[in-house]
Length: 238
Image 1 (cartoon, rainbow, N blue to C red):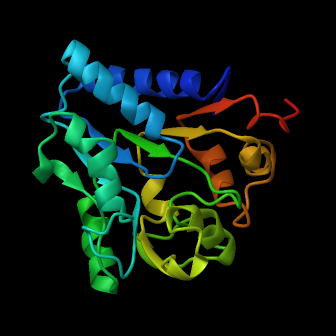
Image 2: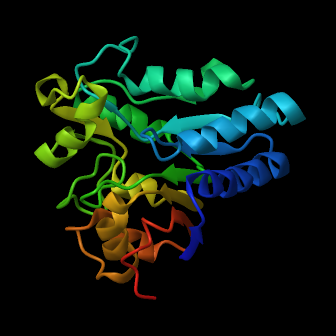
């Protein structure tokens, strides 16, 4: 695991973008695993800016998103499907047919998505305050495939800011790639910023590998790069 402490959010976003650009330039038909949330937005903005200014093309790229809320319409402003279209897909030349966001609430829906996610070159991740990756909450087995998860109150509180700060509006379940799915990616790119992520990052990078911090499993992946700002790195001792 390579950990890069950056000056600020703009710096970490740009460094993460450079990793994505290098991948896409070297392999135009790359498969990217993508994440939602505030952490990767700056990276997506850099991807759009570079596409418009330098012509970097995504027309042959395929994408698979980590997760989506259960019980929310795809066209809902807070759906991750909408988030990805507004924050990335509408700004680059990717074929909409090559973009995939999980959807559904059944075992069959999970199995169908699990079978579809294949050959991911780079998986982008954020990290939750409790160490979750995707919506894999503490206690999730490391070999879990795509599944339906009950969201913890901690996670729903963290996401309430997107729902008028009303936790009652936050969905109670999500469909998510499992930790086993995520770990199949050839390379993992994790971005995080802010002091509120410092405890989770310390547990992920310096703690024991255990299911109470789902992200700690990344210590076992052969190719992980982490870009964090100084606040997020504030509790690291190494």
